[in-house]
Length: 254
Image 1: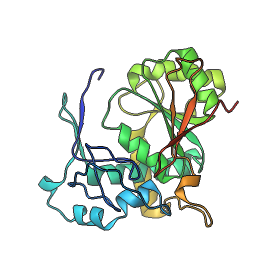
Image 2: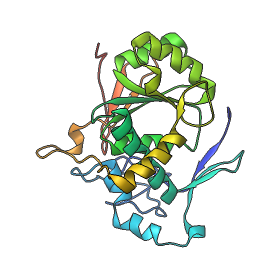
Image 3: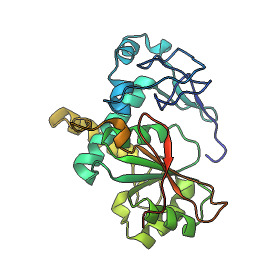
């Protein structure tokens, strides 16, 4: 799927940092577009703000043909926003209950454009863990460095990048049981589609609640995203992006 274009229909990710192509007031309105930056609430997570809002509840009551989503423009594969919520919820439950994902863990996503990327991203955030994106053009050495610096516990990857992910994970002591395929098949890696099915069964038998911000803290105190600088001035630095706020640069945490 190299070169795939994924279209996102008037959606947004970070409610505290809005740009001209997306928009929202204090809770998500999936068809509203604003051009100004608005402050986000500080006492809830991205998951709660997006998927437990009154606006999303109204969206769920809409006719299926009226619900927008993300689309693979090559294959035509599509995930509506309501499906995105369900898939991410199920995946999150499986990661927590069966794979040992804990709040504060870092999960690295190594993939080109894919409609399954936001499913994985929101699943991780729902569990109170942090997402670290990595370029699919990374070498084994670069990925090993990224995994080590961000103290990654899990890796999710696409088939085209899986060989890099597996080799880098081995270099830093991450076992294959903690490497998952976002789609397709690569050797013996477990795919997130399987975990989504497992999570759906968990939901029916023993529901796993979404992560809540601890008393006495705000979302500005809890890192939700990690990115890396380009490294033009030396080794890339990790950039921590707090769930509803802007980014602060942090140094190598080794």
